[in-house]
Length: 361
Image 1 (cartoon, rainbow, N blue to C red):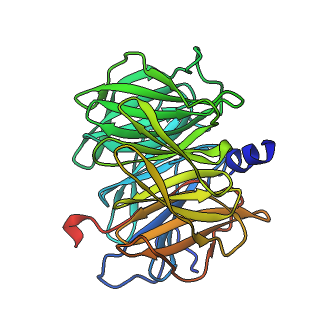
Image 2 (tube, one colour):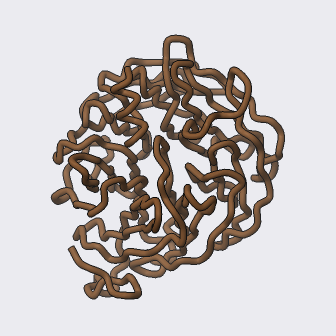
Image 3 (spheres, helix red, strand yellow):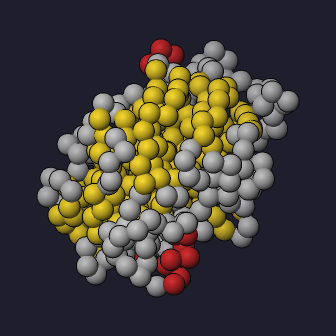
């Protein structure tokens, strides 16, 4: 068990001064893969063209990284906005799309060290070590904080540092935040919203099912059901109407991070160094393919994201981080897209696939 815990808890062109590569893709607006270096002193993001694997930009986040044991430390919205956590600085850096790159916009300050981010209902949501905050979004502008509340464990009290895993929007009235509390099963906090803002009311703290461990990464279907990894017991669960309604064995070790593509959900299995494909329904979750792909580098996969036919996953091994890119079809079948990219850092954490914005297509 301690080995599985460690799996999930630690989990080519140079740019000029402006951070823009000297080779551009002409006038064609491309899909980007954006990763966070997670440097504890000088955090950065790196922006890649998913078609060519060329590094287009390296940009400062104007803060310190260092987050671990989390999911969704970066997030994009509609190909227009991008947010990244500066865990060591209590800030989130916000960027806007600028053709085939990103442009730094601002920093927003959080009420506790930020861990995970999500967009929805004209808001940016940030789960920190002990709190969750909401920020108003107008157009492509992230503005003021309009709500915050403290996170709570199912057994009572605030989560210790390092227990927050992921924040995600369920619907216009609720957020979910997953909290890891081994050897206890763990907690899913249901955070109330009003007109998109965190109300300040106490979350409803729901325990993971008996016999399971560590609600970690999750993805949400349009009907409000969520498929959640139960990472340290190598299971996946379906969460609906404030409760776990189904739990299934993952068939792989330590499914931790998760992303959705249409009706399919993909998990990065850190222990098995594979990617699985799942399907959630209103009442059940099914493993459609226990090994939809393997990690070619032999590294342990971590954060994963998919959009517009492209899936990206980060892995770690031998002191290096890599980005592997895949394409997927309507059946959720994955095909390798080029060789893995060596990111040049040891602890990259977070990946977002950012397709062209609607205005650019």
